[in-house]
Image 1 (spheres, rainbow, N blue to C red):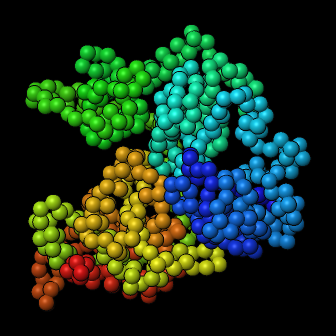
Image 2 (spheres, one colour):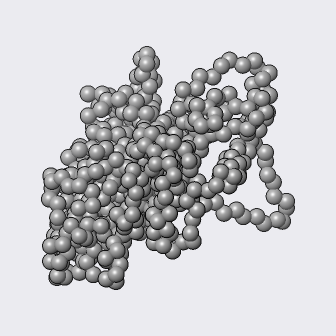
Image 3 (tube, helix red, strand yellow):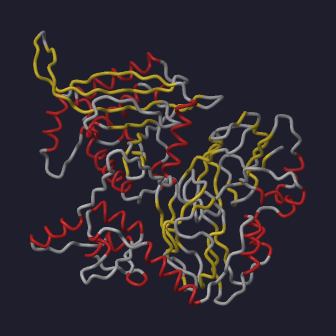
Length: 551
């Protein structure tokens, strides 16, 4: 049966979108995970993925056209299927947008989607039903890392309601309304699909039991309390405060021995920066430490003996398992971990890949880097040199700068190099846009900025999209040779090993040299062995002769 796909809401503030480009045309076969179109939102141009299989039967919004969210975008179904009723009744079917199944039951069709019905059925004046937002283009569900407001709190437009963990980062979710929080549908630590009821805001004392009841019925869940009594709320808050207390001595008490309350994002940034939460004053509710407190914190000088004492206190306790004892622990997969598993699994099991290895003489590169970094306020890494060399090599070998689709090979005229960055929860790939037009120092500054944002979970989705080639460097960890999985829809990824001092033969003599191994993994659907080999030879020439990259 045909599936109606509407203009998606790809950002929390998106009200309309522009179809920048269709990557499929009517009659094309579509599989789950295929990119249907590139859609421009109010924040970025994002790839829109299909969640259905079938044939693209109809396109409702042409390239360059602008359309509000939830208007008919496309229809996918069986080849030859009659969809005239869906096209002619597009406004009525709009509410079924982006559902993973089209209900065959006529009664379900009349009642449409749970959230839409709830909002249309009985919303009192001034009440706003807020759903779990889609904060990234690949986000299918989100986890509430922390609520910064509670039921009964007054909120204004611009207030941060919660911190929501997506598949790519933990983001602050902003309120766009004024009123009182009447209900919270997803508790801290809970995961819910996009468009699930997140919270309700409205005038204090408004009866919203009908809205909550409709949501409960839609989810087949037991009834929920709308607004707990003051006594119950106090107990709930006390329990919540006990759960968020830091376990280590350095962050569980402040200088006066009291407990410290901080948002998960603030804790994460503080840990990355080595900041002791006990030294930070919180500007949030009830003195709670939030992200901006950590970002604005300036450490004060301390006596050496105090620092030594603190270091002793913060040393983590070592838990040893007794000999012969078996012990396992289950840790819930983060949204990022799930996204990585899905993307890499899809790449590994769909792309017929092969790998090519080459060893590069790094003596000239090491000498050149030393000279470049002697210039004041200039810092260039070996990774920056590799990224620049890749961009220049891609210009000479456009076959490598491509993407595969079932019907076409897409040749990208632009060169956007993604740089893999390890973070606590997994791996992110920030993208250096138009890399071939940047100097070594510009590339270095861009990579450092993006990597810092990625590690602190402050990177925007737009800064991780659009790569045409990827570089993964594990050399700093002492790994001299490895093979990466292709970061689709790229056609290739370069694995960079460590620089190793070893005996080499030069001019018939055995001398001490410095070499680095590179591995190029290619999608054989777009890149043949000879093309990959030629690319590596060009890359080797640039790296071994850095002066060629300074022009």
